[in-house]
Length: 154
Image 1 (cartoon, helix red, strand yellow):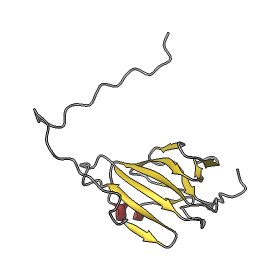
Image 2 (cartoon, helix red, strand yellow):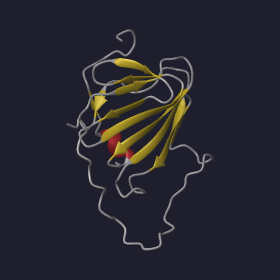
Image 3 (cartoon, rainbow, N blue to C red):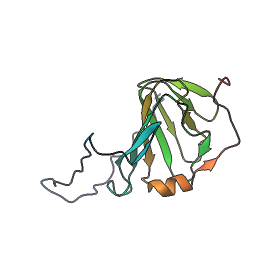
Image 4 (spheres, rainbow, N blue to C red):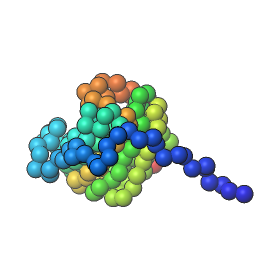
């Protein structure tokens, strides 16, 4: 008896190329951030347009001052977080946890979540949205949850 889910088939081909195409996009580290503020920056690494709507990928870098959204949800996209540096509090819809480099959180569509840097030190993370949504539309369609506090509520 197996407890593993049945394997999903590999997706169907989306390209008819025989020898491969030179269609990659590259964003060098020296590229100015998409959003810059005195307390950090947001780099849009892969846009929904560049990935044919497949996903959007951000690198969010926060300074030492408290920053990040409270609990919220998205009806149209899933969101995943991967901590690169520092300590970032992650909310999984049930509790806040101090995320460390290498920690990962996946939130399906409609799932409550939040992330905040309250460590007093700089921190950064990758944020992946699927499908890839335009950044302005994504922010406009974010739904706030009831007020929650990330500090001292474990």
